Length: 384
Image (cartoon, rainbow, N blue to C red):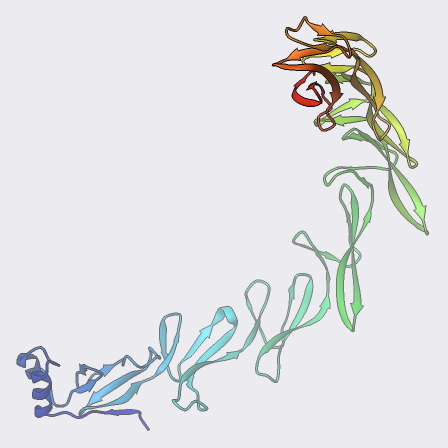
């Protein structure tokens, strides 16, 4: 039975709407027929089909006749287009037919597309008919119609392996700069499985560089030598790496080369650590930096009222370092040329019985002079 919307019409109703502002004027009322339909504040012409605002289906239209609506057109929408109920749409890209129908289980009889596949889609987007076989990515499939009404591509067998977009037959072997690749087809849980088995044919140095058995290659301050060995009955390639230099600031310094930096002379040496040879820089000579000058080891020099000397030492790891220490000192008083002997008292800024103490500041390692008058610290000045 067609859906129907009933409305009340008549000349008296039209006049009532005009008097109460529902219509703009009486002229508008004259243009309305008693056979027209009125719904939610809007009039719809009689004998014409209309899409109603409360209807979510854009493909459903109603006929206005004698003041009532009845369902005139019904369909399904897809890709912005309407297809009438019973209309079939061939979707070649899906190898299926879409049939527009009314959903019988829906209370308001909504429309829907029912998908009816008639073939399987192969790797090229082509429809393969039911019962036919086709190849996709080295695999052979057979198109079958299942009990659920859908067409499925069943894997029949595997022809080979896919590598770099190409299909290689079972047993086919190819080799690049570093590895040999062989196509293997096996069975897993009753289904065929293909895989590429790669075995080294050379020693890999970087992602792009490989060297053959017995060859040498210098890279990044190291010398690489490739050797082929049998381990557990299988051949394998191994790399022997020997350092050839020390790397500093992306530059490789050969073993035995020296360079200077911050009053220290470094030499690149090869040493054995935990059974492995490494290359590293060690300090072989040097001195102490004093402002912008380098003071050689065991050289005594005077600055203000103190004598300093640069002596070699070692850090907590045993590496050689050089430290500046106070060899002898006198307290400065007044001008830079006035130096007092140790224990000699002086008057300083109105304070009497003053003397000075030279000490090293732990946080900075610098030497300082502290003026102490009557047991009270007055000020501090740095020597270096």
